[in-house]
Each structure stands twice: as C-alpha cells, then as structure tokens.
Amino acid sequence: MDIAKLKELADVHANIDYGSTSSVKRGNAAADALRSEVNRLAASGQVADLMPYLSEPVVGSWLAYTIAELLGISDSQRSRCVARIKEIALAGGLEASAAKLWLKNGGYVS
Image (cartoon, rainbow, N blue to C red; front, side):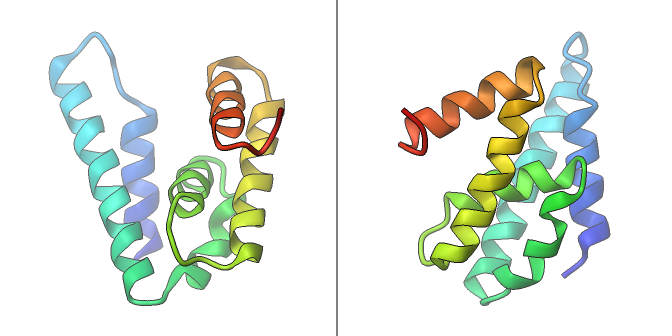
C-alpha cells in the first residue's frame, strides 16, 4: 500500500478549480483512482492497514467514507469510520453539510 499516493489523490481532489474543466476532470479521475485503490486493498484484506490514516486531514475523510461503505468490514472498523464522519459533520461548512446528509441517509442519525 502506498499511503503517499492516496494522500496525493485526495489532495488533487480537494484542490479542484471548478472553473476549470481540466481541473474538474483531474479531480474526478483522482476520486475514481482513490476509490479503486481502497477497494483493491479491501479485496486483499488490507482495510486494517488504512485505519490509522482516518485522522489525516484530507485523506482521512476520503478513507472514512469509502471504507464505511464497503461490505465485509468489521463493526469496529465501520464504527471508527462513522465516528470520523461525525467529526466532519461538526466542523461546519459544506463538508459538514455533506457529512450530515451522509449520516442521515445511512441511518446513523435521526
């Protein structure tokens, strides 16, 4: 696993310039690559290796959402991911609104 690559992909997505078509395309490609890599790691039983990075500022939120939506993870892993998403929901701003919606749609809050 190359956490540096995951961090790089998360940073590319976090810095999308929505006024630039090429930036949006790069950001979307980075998001797809990040999800693909997490899914690949999960399929090879390496989800536990990703868990320490949940607290990372940028990649941590990506990991929390992506891992929480995986089938076959442990209850403990899902709980840690949901806890991270709840932290995001408390932060304020657009990301917080998205986190609140994700938590509500997932049945984690009423």
